[in-house]
Amino acid sequence: DDIFDYIHSQNSEFTIKISYYEIYMEKIRDLLDPKKTNLTIHEDKSRTTYIKNVTEKYVETGQQILDLLCEGKRNRAVAVTDMNEHSSRSHSVFQLTLTQSNCVTRQKVSSKL
Image (cartoon, rainbow, N blue to C red; front, side):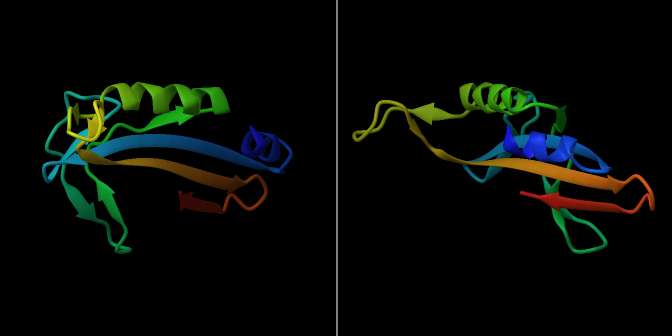
């Protein structure tokens, strides 16, 4: 919750949005909306890559972030292996996008973590 404490102490407006997806068998699947499968990677004008049509959810608390992590984890592809009964056969990406808008200048700055 430290990030939210900091945000509320500033003279700026902040938004935080979350996306969570996995790469499994060379396909990208949305873990927050598992019906979205075979998503594609794109690049915008500033050469930033993004996943087209991935679900992005706005959050306001640390608990909401943890809830989304749990939701996505339940949707991951897993299978039994010789080494682990619940082994994941995928790579997951949990992305947090923080956007700050200065209340005076209206300048916006965005970062992806």
